[in-house]
Length: 353
Image (cartoon, rainbow, N blue to C red):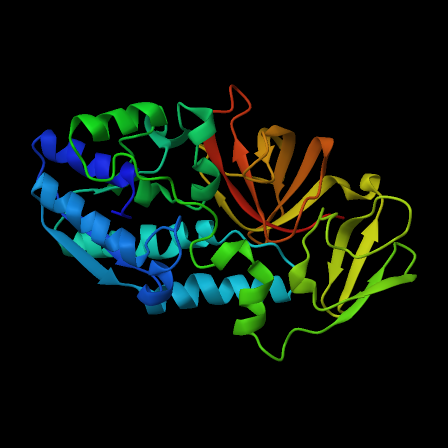
């Protein structure tokens, strides 16, 4: 129970259906700082809201202190990823670690038969076993952030909201009189104030952020910067360059502390390399290319592609049409080419040849 409307409705519906429900909220980071930031999840105010919902439903509620685990597995990885020139997705790391690994273990230790969450995805019984599918409402689909789920986790986890539009979820909250029925959705990364990613990395890794040069594709120096942590692939604004033509960040070089810029066409990539691939298809992913729909950022629609295993736990992806701003550190998630509903897995983008 994050303190938001989605997990509140899940808990209420399960209790209404007669299940014995235990509400669990994770304390993930400093409560004082968290309370001061509106629009976050798992913050101080949210813990209070989750308890209010549990009291209204009439279920027990526990708060688990996962602050140290969250710092190690999510926040530290986030900072190190930015230092290495990547654009990380901490929500995926959080789901893979504290939520569907540590919390699932805690649920088992409590004797629970299942762990239910407010994520908008679907768990479907297929011919080869349980499958992970996109949510019925495309605008709310969160499958991109859950590509690391294993088959074992799918056996234990439930997603009661996967078939519902968000408007219906809020209507249910209103019908049940839940105190968070009109609470706004969480926004941005929970532990980053005002979305200023570079500031928190600079604070966490003081002394490791190096200034350097902004160069063009031929290596000519066009300007200076205060650290590659303040840039991401595809960025156009904030470069501080007066060249008379629009330039975009096309590559970050942590070894040289360089930000490489170029024209928009230089952002296009047709081949992607992935590491730490999680495959959920019925047949093993082999060296022979197989068709999939691939999504290279959470905000983009999946596109036709072919994926093949590389033998080192990674994969090679060839896109049918070039995609812009394919950034190392982001996830590439695979969907079935027939309709694009089923999640076939995914991996972490390392580079584009």
